Length: 313
Image (cartoon, rainbow, N blue to C red; front, side, top):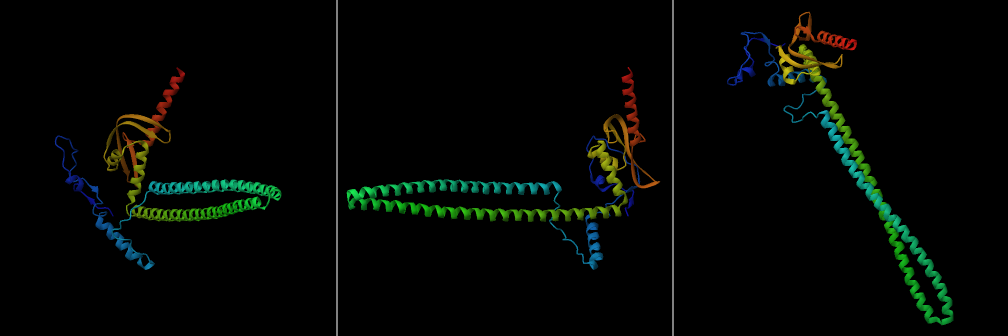
């Protein structure tokens, strides 16, 4: 129920008029609807309390009183997901860089292994050759060559051990990076699922509030539809606010018709929103006392006749 009052609006009553500025002279004791006493902060808190008491038998509880939680807009929600995705992609690039570096070291190590094996083969060939020469030169020279050969073998063994250790280190690094990547992906999927669930819950609650508001205030839906129509036609937010108060708006400019997909110019036209007692809970937009839809059709026919006349000429 919306009270019917005749007094001046609270906001207008408290607002001071600028010096030298003309103001609209209001009619005395004009009847208007006022929801200030129905939708104020205390009343809305009371509605929540009474609704929770009635639904308590179904296991529902009242929401947090004075909660700091804020609704996340769809734009902010996708912005957060995009930011998190970019962060994960950067981490994946770093991990990929580490893997490429490890593969480069492995390739280099394999090349060194082949070089060492070739050197070992050369050493064995030289040893065999020296052994034959030693048999001709004597045992002293042969022992010296064998000692040098053992040092070379020890050097090759140490190098092969280092290569094996490097292989193990590369394998551990790849395993660690793979685990970190899997963990980050699971965490990202969990965060995305939580954000989607929270967003769905908030949207459901908001839709529920809108449905209740439409049920409690039947004209609310009509006002929302009229606001959407005025916005599509081309009125500004301030102009829409004037029209929804029931006041006439003197307008000059262009109006867009979705039906004809074009704009029509108008000068000093009177725009006003009317209600029809035979069609309750509906609002109608008129231009110069003519329904806006009929006015668009009339302007379309006029422009069409002008084009046909131009072609005949």
